[in-house]
Length: 440
Image (cartoon, rainbow, N blue to C red; front, top):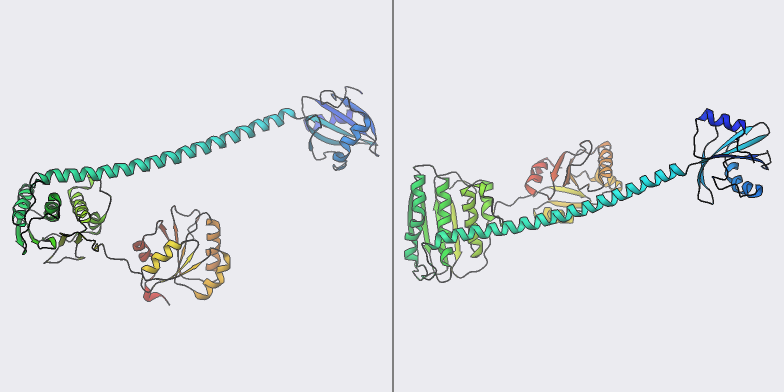
């Protein structure tokens, strides 16, 4: 065995620009009989092997390589766990197997892979911590909102109880004077006239209602009208007290409540203080009525005789809340692609004719044949499939409206006609759908 490599091997190394901490070569005749071994075989752990053992070790690998210059590289791990790189070099009546030590490179790759795995684990841990933090923030926000509601109610109670101590239950004949006393400073500040009448056959003390509720419902019902009025306007209110109900009817000259203002009445979550006096007043009114199992009725348009009615039963019982106008999808024919059972129920309740199909290319034939006016798609994690399905639908001549519904905008080019935010808003959906008269 020689420490020097054969000239053919040395030239190959120089020509290819190969380097390694240790190099060795094993030479064979055309019949794959070992005829020489050279280089740093001891550093590679091969010096102790016999010729026969080397033949067995390298035969299977070398037989798979071309016996031409520039042969492909084979990367193997020797029995002693040494990572090596093999090259097959032909020379006249023999060929040489060049063995290069690649332990450093393999170790480097292992270190990089380990670092990548550790980074993945750290990223997963950070994601878990982020989810926990978001959950904690959500919980704190809910607690903050609950405290805000309690603070709003406590503030309202403090201002009202100054005029209606709980130890002295209110009587209907005293209610008008107390309401005027509470609202007089506001009327003076806003330069608004307040005219109030009282009706009702019963003058029994309002034992069934707490003192602050009996005073709070009329105060906040009238206050919202005063806040919307212009200087010089007149707000008229009638308080009616019967054996069954305490009711206040308000008439004002201002514009009807907007949709967002109406929503303040029926929202269970208190608005931010920055929302303004009107929003807080409407919320307080709704809150008192809900607590007393009462109701608030607001006409949809301007009404010269009634702008708002608020009432609470003197014998509390659950009554139907009158909310904003219900969205109707009557006459709409809609196909839903994907898992959306909750949507289907809501759409059917709103009057739509709904058909649910799987988000699959097998549904293309059904859609092309039936040609529904509108298709709702919830792509979820199958965005690529949804896009491909829509393109094929269009290619088959489908001309209906395609609406994508997701938490985030679907990626890539806009393959949809409309994109709606999840959870589904029926008002926004109705605007995106074609008019029933346009459907075939």
